[in-house]
Length: 431
Image: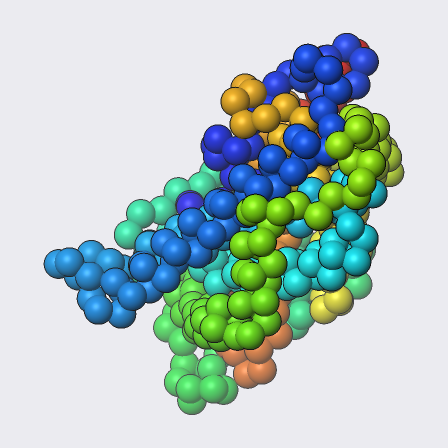
């Protein structure tokens, strides 16, 4: 799946290995405000170039393009380039704000955050839908028209099911214990509610005859069949909901790019390409203490994470909370999302100090990829739970959405485990 969040292969993400004392690349003399000014000018230039490409691609797409090849990829790639530049400018303003004009930087940061968030939503919804449909195919074997190729691997081999997610009864003997601890309804092994009529359509779903009698197949085969029955409708429901959300995000993005608010941001960035508003003392100030402070904030946030628990491939306690029908965001996810943002700020600070030609730090790359997977899986699980709360859906559809939610929470735990492993290697390898 084409999910690009941390831009691990982007040349601007490269930086050198750690030095013994600070963890930053060696340089001839300490980097000062001049290095920050050069970095901001380069990112402002990238922003303007991406903006020009976005407008050209949008014009070509509106005209149909040569041989109809303009398609959505041109605007999508240009929007990603815009987001990359905006994130780096915003992150640098946050980390090195003592060296910048305070009024200018404080007025720019919220505008850059608004622009980055607006541009990111369309891609996020598209990637979330692809992720959920691939997972449904992997779990049930159902074929969805929107999916030409499918992939993905099962996580940990742990059984999923048995919990009710927002009213979605999920069967399975292994999941019943988790559901009981979470205080949610269980479908059981023989009593899974997989038949009946869909109140929204007035039609009975196939394979519902004889649901009250004893199962004709073994329990595992029955659960698999029940999941296959509801997976097609679950995929269609997710497709409707997330495609609608993506369409709205696309409209919001177009409106934002044509608004006076965006033009004001673009004007400020255009001025930044030629004149960086540094403080008078910035050119003689060492950047390394500010970059070290960013690294320490990351280290403190990681220290607060339950890495000992995340060190187990199967974290049953976290899954109990993850299968809760509470519609509020998962309370365990927020600290991990914060670490992901702090890791990004740390990477950008190293880019300022090291320059664009330094090699990739594989340890930070691996940790960032794990946190990206964590964010994607947690948001996909929330989308599945939200779909399961749709009124008047058939029990088999709710069952499939519940299993899908549990599967994505397993992906969350797998990502935490991967981050724990990569971070331990990073800690051991750093003096």
